[in-house]
Image (cartoon, rainbow, N blue to C red; front, top):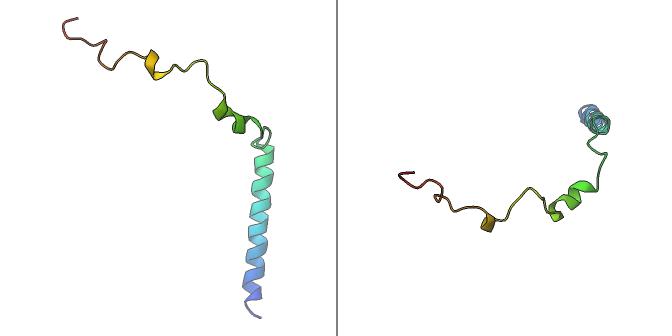
Length: 65
């Protein structure tokens, strides 16, 4: 029975920390857009080029040029 005096305050403390962390994430805007991060890997970026478009690693640095 004496363990309840330790466990109950710890449980309340952990619950308060979890609620505080949730409130902080909502206020900081981390939960605003839930759809875009899931779709981002499926969309090709226009700025990226395929490895075939890049010059070989040493083609530009020929000696004597």
